[in-house]
Length: 408
Image (cartoon, rainbow, N blue to C red; front, side, top):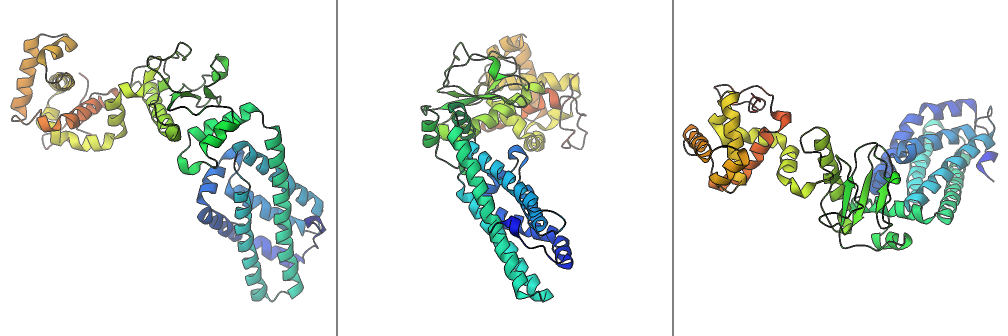
């Protein structure tokens, strides 16, 4: 007996079920999210599906199956089509169906408990409760069977490029989000796991499929945020490496930490698009550690600026900015005034004069030999275009916003 054979419910019972539907869906969703957090994270947002959406459609179909005004076959067909798509999506992602069965089991237990509570509270006839409980498990069985068919069909037809897409997604996922070991995915994709990988983030709209890439490079072809996974990246990069202006290469990391490389590549790409980092072809994150670190911790550096630089921030912009720029370059040059002058294209005596001004204004506290790194990070952040147009500090000391210098 299938769910299409379900007996129509009395009108009042069906109204009661519809009235309590939102609360039941909330409780089922909470049970799945709490009991299977990793699965929930993996499912969310995949092709428009979410735990909430799946539960909502399943429960709505369950009620519709018992509607005398609608054929049970139509509601059953909707459940079957839904779970065939879900099963196929699991197959595409390489996610085992066991966790889907566990999720349905959790939701089904919540549904049965609520039905029992309503039955005792509303004095339902025992046969009605038995029918609804049996139909619940029947519907779950139908859903699992449909998902298994979709999963099997997807896995059976999966070509090599599908396996490579699964591997690519797993390489840039956090370890607790992976449903299969990387070695297993790599074997299925006929791809040798390298010692290191790096992710090249491409500007939005750049299409990797228009490039001739080596077979070992894994490409994400979605135009909104395309990227390439490069095995064993070298410096300088190989000739085939896209010379796209604005592309950013993340750090080389072990294969299991590809998410780190993707995360920093995309952060670098954001800074390039905002004009805070040069639009190289491509820009390497490891060459801009200070800038990436500073822009990631702007609020902390903003608060520390007054402590490190004090009276320098209270100067008018035309006096303040040359001093801050000279101090930053001087620290980067290892306290070498000659090299600093060469980098700034000024005379050596100009550099020494500015350093004396800094020492006088800060009573010799800046630069502090023990705090060179912190000072460089603060100066990098203060001299960036994004913080260069804020108001000048007042005499009472710089506020979080007033601590930023302005361009003259």
